[in-house]
Image 1 (tube, rainbow, N blue to C red):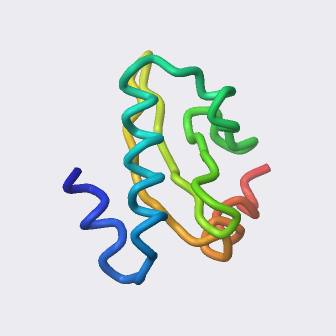
Image 2: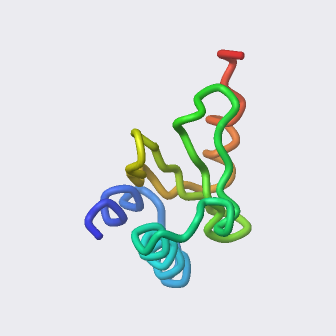
Image 3: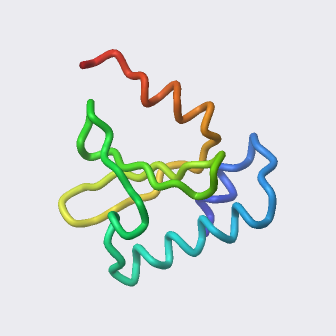
Length: 88
């Protein structure tokens, strides 16, 4: 999962966060619903999806047609700055 290496290069998450993010990605590939993973769409762009990894980390994904592409694993603080987008 090379994107995890790239996305987490500037942060130092624990091993459990990386393993949980990989498990979420495996679940998505196996057809588990976003809603079972507690995924929610962003209000300003319905193609952006956030999935909680742990209490402090989120997985940001982009949906294009039926394909979901993981973009980044980020801290909740970073996620908050994205979630407060002013394009409303």
